[in-house]
Image 1 (cartoon, rainbow, N blue to C red):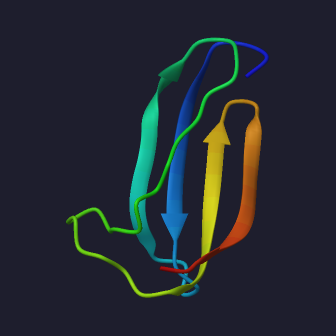
Image 2 (image 1 turned 90 degrees about the horizontal axis):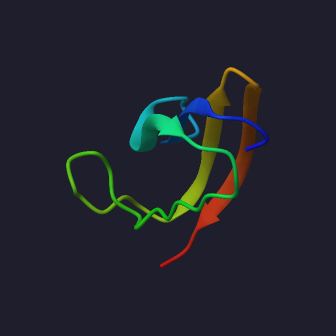
Length: 70
């Protein structure tokens, strides 16, 4: 992050339903990492397939696709 920002990082399925929230907090300047363990917000494993992650902050929204393969 080029500046301090409130950040939300979430995983969505192909229907646009939120599967898991990975981050929802204020972060300082710098590089940050987050990992998804292939579970939903209830802790249940999700199926293999196509998912999207969306990173939202005051600086903008970035959405990209990813493939979950176990």
